[in-house]
Image (cartoon, rainbow, N blue to C red; front, side, top):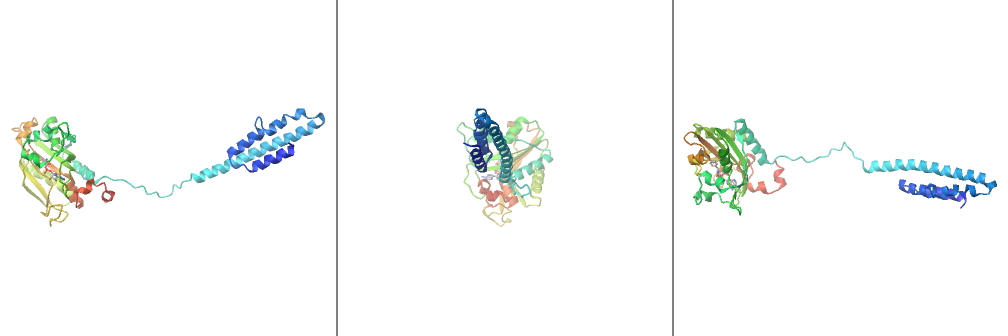
Length: 336
Ligand code: FA5
């Protein structure tokens, strides 16, 4: 092929190169070790002597021209490829992206608040397992097998004879076994009961247990602590009533009810039309329970309470059905 035709073909093919990789293919085709122009330059020495000089000169011009064109095109394509990359990967850092922020669940928020209130009064926060022994959940609390009080807390049993704790009082049992009096503890946690569900009853809910053991603890100490708790949580005065309540692990025992804040005491499905919600059973720790925990009831006395956390949160935020807490409905959670 003549030098002129090689030049024409090369320039046509160069004009059709639009990417760096096709340009590289073209370079190899013409200027690689076995490229068309490279091979052509090796034939200079085979030309007749009289034509050799002119032929060599023209081949050199072709070669230099091709190299220059290849280099220029390479720079051009680099810029084009960079621009298209910038275009496709471009971000505007000034755009106001509204990332949804999470927040604490109302149960966690109020539990944290209660922990703050009690730790500021010198209480220590205890934890305990959700699967408990029959001993810690019932027997150590003066509720032996076949005691009618077991019917008050229908129980989920595990196949190995343990149970899902029915109340956080199991945490106070662990506290008594591990701490030396005097002590003040709270034990928040999830509890489980085999319950029929309605607006104020769940099978999985939260309680906060509290226990103080010291010398000369009286009902007056108990009531003062309960009043502080409610005042700090509700940040306003709420109407409460104290009435006798029976729990085998306290003597005397009380039920502290709150005037229903969903219906302002008028009667609704949450308070079962009574105007009152059972919230905070409490009492002085039964001497048998102290003894079981290794504490001498002749030297020490104590009070204990078991706050229903879900119901407290319902009263605080005006939630009219306890089943919302476990509904997984984001519209519910997003309100807080
Ligand atoms: C007890 O669980 C006792 N352990 C509380 C206690 C502790 C008494 C220390 C004395 C001394 P009770 O079963 O009443 O008691 O439950 C306590 C609170 O948990 C109730 O007042 C109520 O607010 C809440 N509660 C009880 N059952 C349910 C339920 N099914 N769903 C939601 N909340 C409940």
